[in-house]
Length: 182
Image 1 (tube, rainbow, N blue to C red):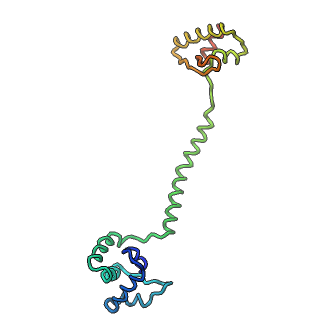
Image 2: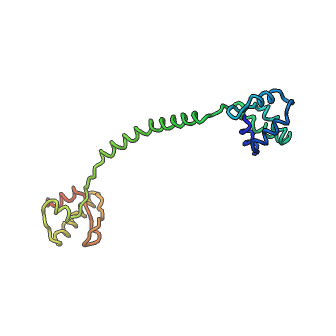
């Protein structure tokens, strides 16, 4: 750990950590050697034991013990760099695309296969398609027959909006074909 990392982990500034290290002068040779070789461009990198000695110098034995307990589980952990995180992110995105592309292809083919099929019509709409112009009375008669055939055939009768009548019944095209044959 560098002095900056030690300062961040104990909530102190770097100059306080550097003062603690200077007070240790001669007490631990490895700290003295690293301090003499360090520079702003090449900061000293202290081991866990050296870091604990520095913290004990500045904050006391209890603080060093608490730091040791918190640091033990991560002592053997690997250091993760920004580059490692970027590579990990790229791998996740690549895997997501690998799984997403087949789903998108399935969705596109499904959408192509879906066509709007209208198979329910009002009596007037079906008559207009067939080129027949029934009167209101004839349309009502066709509607009664279509409803009766739908019930007998166990085919759903739906309601659709009509600007003149509010809602009117709509029937399956096969039922209406039979009605208009009669």
